[in-house]
Length: 322
Ligand code: ASP
Image (cartoon, rainbow, N blue to C red; front, side, top):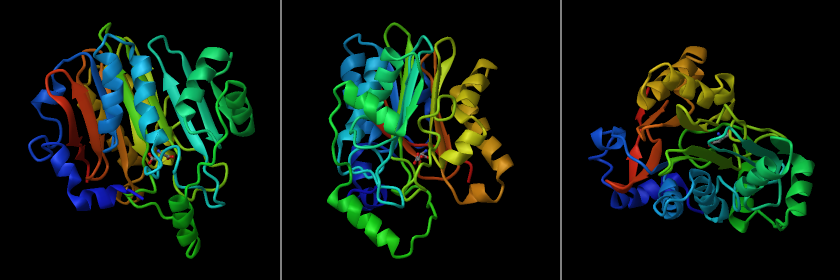
């Protein structure tokens, strides 16, 4: 199973991008640019490639973020999203996802089992139902009615990891390793419209029925086409407590840059949880209407990928509070 820790150990990261040169947000990434797409974590690079195919040919940001989010969802080697995602403590892979467009249309699914691409189900919820959010059995029934196929999401590798975990059965998320990752992806298209998506298998070995921030509009994703878009990853409970992505967008509305907005949201978590915040990871990405980007996390190690015309597709590491 590919995990971020192994990935970093292999040194593959360095070969993907000039991480040292691009530490934090250098000038190049904060400059205005459109189209632009940014995604959380190392798998953001591959996600951005798919999103860019749409953005660079004049396509819509909404289509781009969906296409990008589907990449890690469909990759059985990614243990934190979609197929191959680590299960809950009962061995069930339950997926959470949401999507939001430039008109404030949004759709979400949570605790969805057996479907490889929850982001596409979330989009169908947005486009084909009078609702925003479907969960569990109802979400699955809806997905099947829309032609999605029922599949087994627990791979041999994720089952093995779960069985290993059962030996101690301790729920103790560790920052920046595979028991919590999510792809959050936000984009600005040529028409200067914003959209975003977020998708995850959630915290590994969570309680059955647990839902984190990832499918919650306002928590892990928010888009306001007048202002900007934001997304989050990390321990979802802390993001929900501050309605993180909505907070980031509202901070931008008050005149903060995307970078300042991400920093202030992280500081809010530290203020709420001065002790706990030292041990957990939360990261935010933000993009404003001018194509300026921001990224900030509690801990070191939060990587994200930015793709625009000027600099191509680069992997960066966000600055952090600790
Ligand atoms: N935010 C996700 C959750 O809490 C996990 C993650 O981003 O790693 O479910």
